Image (cartoon, rainbow, N blue to C red; front, side):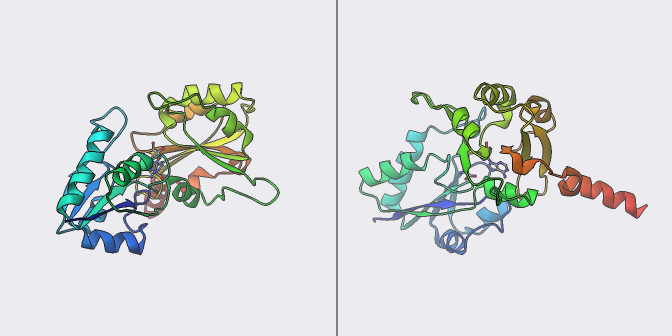
Length: 255
Ligand code: SAH
């Protein structure tokens, strides 16, 4: 048997934010290796397939990347359609390259199916474009998270230079992120927003500034969250956007 491994983007959380190609592959899959955050309804699309959680969440149980690579290679020896389902888009902060390289080195055919990255889902929730005529024409995706053995990388400088910066894996380190951005020349008053659980029913939007990021981070929970920075976020109206607040308002008007 010489199966193909498909690295498939599962999207940001909402199960219907999935490509048709991803849905078709899930329906055909013999085996699915998935991240911890993938929605159960998305996995249900692969009803007959064997499902193996290989989720990596910071501070929680993590399956070593090398072991995941080996599992994918072994599965391709046994099954026709192997799906590796990753949150958001596989090609952004998803360690896709390690899997692609391992598969290619092992002679296993590999294909990638894009997904909606968290930055796009959060922008949709915010109803706020990453770019804006006359205000923002550059966007940086960056992370303060450093992998073991990574070469020095000045993510904060890149974020400071961009009109809009989207920081992945950053909300849990709000103090360090805020300090690093300010050291890199970002005015503390530059608008920022934290978006937790973008596209999800439990989404939470906390508008703030770069200087106040640590205080704002106290208001987000344990869900995945993005820190977004830029003048485009000057007028984010959280009251009208937070689903919790909308539910509260609906309750009030029912009384
Ligand atoms: N490949 C993924 C990113 C993986 S890194 C993508 O394209 O979206 C994991 C980080 O993504 C989390 O720490 C968080 O910063 C962000 N993230 C993932 N899903 C999210 C969501 N629904 N809402 C907000 N941030 C999210």
